[in-house]
Image (cartoon, rainbow, N blue to C red; front, top):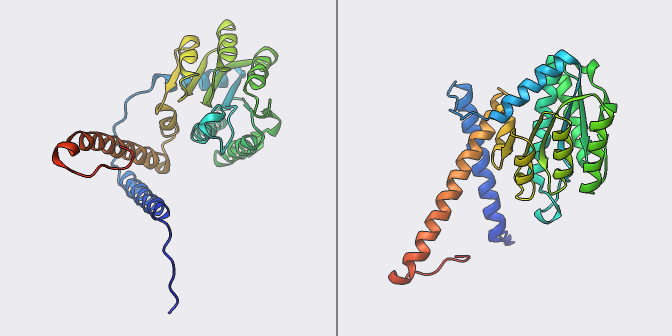
Length: 270
């Protein structure tokens, strides 16, 4: 008989975790379809976003939308993470869908060519799902720089001065370069709805605007902007996974405290 080697333990763990996450998402999706909606706290920053959409529909001024200058596949050492960028893309897609329904014009920008392609597809799909394909304008989706955060920030400030922008939504991958964008927007008295998970960007965001999404709120924003069951089930799965991780961390800490006195084996990484 031919023996088939087993995959390494790391691969088995990844497959198991993936299976658990898929099952959790499916169960939460079924729960949403049954009408069991989660109780959510309010996010004032998103209230400001809805006001900006309504104002744009009334005045015809552009709503600037950006997921930042990060790239898909980036690590934490490159000025952003893939998770932040993907969250920003999802927020941009939801904002584009609401803008298409409300008739508010938008201007979308990116600081990475790969992210730009994803962003262009997401915005186009949002207009298609809203039944407003004829209003989609690919020329309103701009590449301002490529993997250069400072150059991208300079490009955004140029848009602020050149275009008739009524508000700006910047949720995603940002770093210290945001000071250039945020300060320019504040001086122009431009409403800005911003969000990031980076410790370098968050203080600067808090200084320049009161409509700031902090940390995990960035990943929850997409579900707040949509009533679709898929978005709600993703949010519920994220909350459950976060709870599990917190419990594991607390359990590991307690185990590391009592294991020496009870003669228990130490766990790797503790």
